[in-house]
Image 1 (spheres, rainbow, N blue to C red):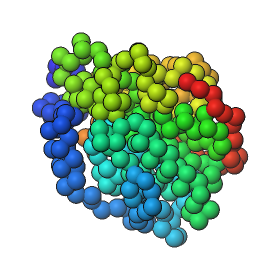
Image 2 (tube, rainbow, N blue to C red):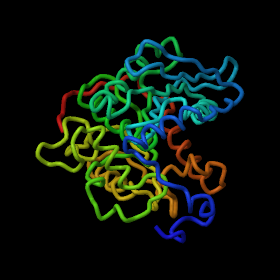
Image 3 (cartoon, rainbow, N blue to C red):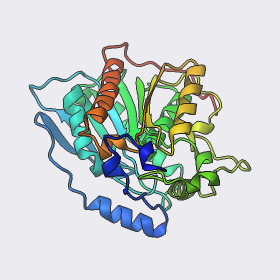
Length: 324
């Protein structure tokens, strides 16, 4: 990828940023680096703690402190890492800022990682956090009709898959799906023509390793096709899914698959906002969150989520299952 394809506001800091390796050695290095990243301080007015007794490990809980604004809504947030690395701790400040800015409870899900724990384990772990949130909504002062699911990168893909699974299972549904540069389609990884493009942060070689670790087979296979809710973009029927916000940069490897998914959601009658950032690489909201152009992008995303989590009717059961 040419440097002039990146937005001028971030070009100088992104140009030489290496892609994250997702092979065996890359996983070891990536996990070690992420484990040592400082968590940073939370904004004032936010209390945090751990949620134990969950299969994926202790998730993180962020609640508005007494006396601070709170809306009675909540977000289940899912971290990125290509399905092979990362933890809830890496989004500690992000989750705390969301809690403070929107007055919502945030549960940042911990889930087990591939290849040690391939599909469906990571999705099962996120499903268990959703169930915990439903069960404890009353204790948290949260309306179960105003729960959203969201995530970044692999976490965005898991959030989309979770929304599909909950649609098929019936019961209380997410009020929204909030997806930052989501990893949605293993067929992108199978396109070897993309290997020669130097996508910053996450390139197609890493993408292929991540999907192969998660699926247990080479990505892009048609016989057999990936099971169930493993690959959100493979689902044929998208009708009845929650309203969606999808944000992605046009310098992101996932740009085309994310735009295609947004268009399919719209065609299926799902209220969908697609926010494409010109010249933005993968995860720009993390890499350059202080840049005014990026702050405006995150602000639009927060405004959309706040609107979706405003007062609305309580539990909205649906019939299920609907299949893929």
